Length: 81
Image (cartoon, rainbow, N blue to C red):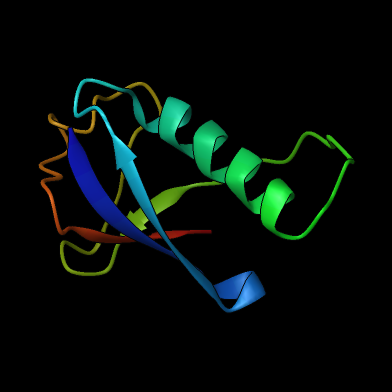
């Protein structure tokens, strides 16, 4: 398990997420989107494309890569764009 801090600039929102480092980027994006829907009480399930970006690495992570392969460890800070 790893703990990540994810900042969502469009909502000026930061969330802490605990997840497995074997999960893929797209799985993490789905988890975070569901968490955001719950926080803002949004029921709409509109399909939108998001990316996971690391300002520290100046890198956009591929959707099918595992979090471990992206070099994300506990305490990593990323952005959902």
